[in-house]
Picture 1: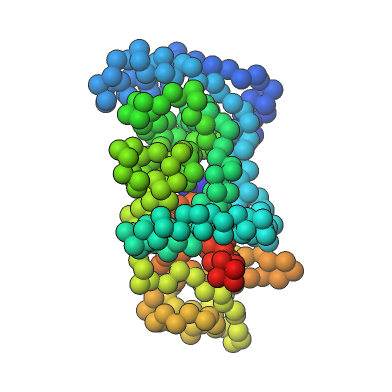
Picture 2 (picture 1 turned 120 degrees about the horizontal axis):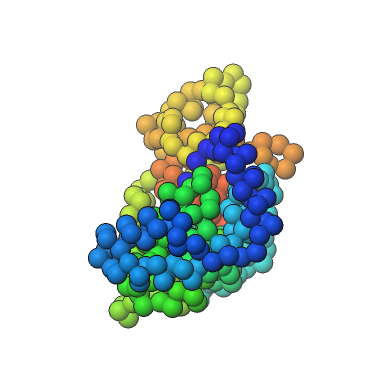
Length: 334
């Protein structure tokens, strides 16, 4: 989800960051051409009075620290061995075991309903919010408005999210000044952005509301539904540790790809060794990461790609898988 930024765009962004960092928080200027165009389009598309949209947006504040945060996400600025240590800690694994034990019945029900293993659901919630401990402190409206109007590299994406948040907050009856989330506008215990909340959140506790802020069943069911809707398949493999042996014709990638651009057979014949029992025809991708003192090699397959639909990052997906696996092992030992 992070497009490549050209040299010219990087220089423009750096200048914008410098200007914003020297400026106090400022309310959205609803007379700006781009802001007015947004208000007009949302009002016309959704048949809402223009003044309602304008008033809703006028209360938002531009926040320079949001742009600073999104410009340097951990998965882009840290090597794998440092990124892994954020999530694979004894404390988080212990918290994951406690979370699984407390919500075992709900996790089992979600696994049965959607076909997604409990350890993957637990891994995602552990990475995203540390089991509800870290859900974000930014007002969602501020975050999305700042990124929509003052972050050119992804303005189009966040403009769509801002529109979705307007519709979502009205449909759910939220007090938008109180809803808080990440610097990218992700919300609740599963950290759904507005378009995902509208599309994939489910009422798993059957109380008539989709509540990802206060209902663990809804959060668990929604994470599972998101992965199922992105084609998680219980009969497909996820990930396997790998090694490179000589002679080899498959060279370790300089840049990891999210797409499954090879097959296991091609990798095996090219010098990649893996413990996976999947057939040669299985789509796969070779992954190289910076471990402590040496490279780590992995082979990602169908369900690994599905995890990257939650966050477009190889390191994120690997952290989710490893955390879930470590929690499952610790729970079994206990």
